[in-house]
Length: 515
Image (cartoon, rainbow, N blue to C red):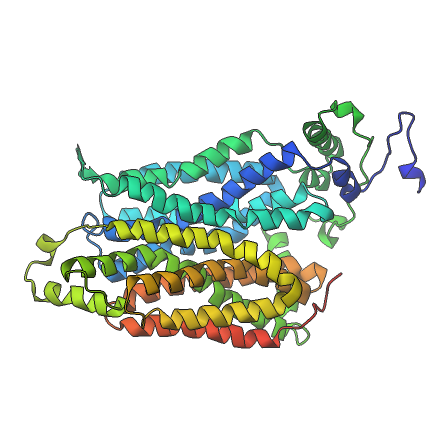
């Protein structure tokens, strides 16, 4: 032990590295609350992104939407996420994690209220873009915030538990929708008649509001404070966490001072202003360009393509599931209980509509009960899949589990158009949605070992950006092809997942950079 870490008069240590100090705070009540709040960030993001799926059938008459309009509406939040990702990451690194999460969650809540009050499609579309722009921060920054309060010994387990929270959102959405959307009331406002789906828009933002209120009770990340030269503030936070976990007075925390961080960038060392636009652009370029050199080009391609396909399946299909379940249920109700494949159901419903002369007058926003029941099953499957992966990843290994999962989901994606019953469609949809969602975190854990430490953050960030492109393409594909070329939609969905499984064979069996 060096001189900076010698024991003080009261048995406390000085100059303690952060990773050692965070381990000394223990693990208890504070971390349970932290998990709930950070998990709430993830749930809030899921509700904001996928809640629109229940609006596609419910709001189609009020907003006068075609299928193409629905596809654009389903994609707009993901487009907003593309524009917001780097900005919020930069602000989180320069102004603090907690402040960014608080701001974006409260703004997201306000946007939901505004969206419930706008009368026309294009205004709703703009607000969906803004919702995606702001809600991208709680998810990404929330993960960083969660990890910085954990030592390496407990960090992995915290992320495993955090993987359960997307499924909570998948259960919350149909549960609330089942309660609200079948209501037939109409509230006459000066500029429009408001129906129940507008209340649903506001309720989808409740997780954002509740999580923001929970975040108010938490401190700023001590690791961020230390990186900003605020070592005393960081130590005060660690003492608070220690007291919450152990029930002892903060003064008993066995650390008198923290060692300065050792991961300053060259720009900081040279005295460059890290907040200047030129410095940010130069830093982004310096971090991005090496990913496309000969040494890392294959790994980069695999990371981008595989994440594109995984998130296209994990977000594209779930957004449209309420619409697909609704059309299958409507077909069965209008054909005396006779079931058919999803494409046959869509064609069967189009037949009478195509012969009508007044489409607007015939518009009827019907959301069948099966939509909510089936999506509740999808949410439950989303809880089961990550739990099973915890038990399977040991004997199979991450790479083998990923390959098997992608080949399974690809086959199920192709099979969605062939099963001629709503039950069969539900089973395959549960597999595709739950397993692809699990594959996001599974592949992320593989990807970080494919790149050296100084490139990992940028590599994962870039792959997630391509994943969001996959979400956009998936939603637009469903909107443009569902009625005109329905089978092609599922050929594309299953095909890209099978291709991702095939490319996964090129992944290294052991990470090249595991240090």
